[in-house]
Image 1 (cartoon, rainbow, N blue to C red):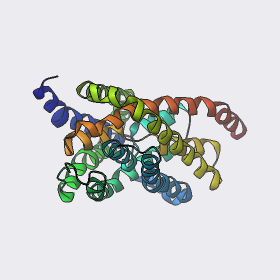
Image 2 (image 1 turned 180 degrees about the vertical axis):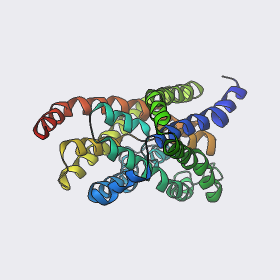
Image 3 (image 1 turned 90 degrees about the vertical axis):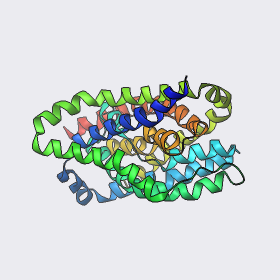
Image 4 (image 1 turned 120 degrees about the vertical axis):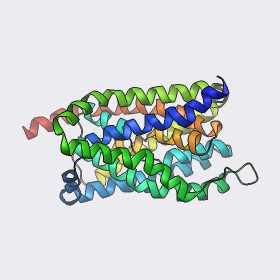
Length: 296
């Protein structure tokens, strides 16, 4: 692929794709949805703990355990500090989980990580790439970039829902599968422009990526069990902690840090998380249906 095509993907396509995904999230949100914080604060706080604290620690631990090269370990860590995305909401919907919980967790983690990602990246870059070529990162500039591609599209979606709820609902139904397609296309483009690196690191990076996703999902399920959540909420927590906003992670590596090698881990993780989430949903389906039957 030509350099001009690569520049188009990294500076135009990936940011616009991410903004579309976050806009679709905003279409499903209203301010009253955040009342879930008061009604089910324990589950929401536990979910955020899994997403924002335990997931980054798992990513660090897996990188150390598998003795990953610095760039692969950093790529894995960037995944760990990224929030959940609309893909997790779509998967929760397919699995008949608690969609309201999933949407609130995704929205809150997306807002919090506007501030945590730049700070954690400013620590991680010199830590992982010490002695190598360390990309220059401005924390305030990165925060503004994240506000532009995440917070503003969410806000626009919420405003549209408030003033035109019928149109927003129809648009959200149309965009739900579109967001998944956008994720696949972004991963596809990223794979194409870094194909040699993906193939070279597939054997080395595949097992730790699979391990991280499985551990993250099990962590979400364990959190649900510890707080006494029902089956639907537990499955939702497993999905929300395990399925991350890969499009945002790719945006960070390609558009913010301008580093193809760092995108390798996100490309592989995007595929692995969808496969494992599908297995999780299939495994939970009888339990969810049984719980719905008891509640009927």
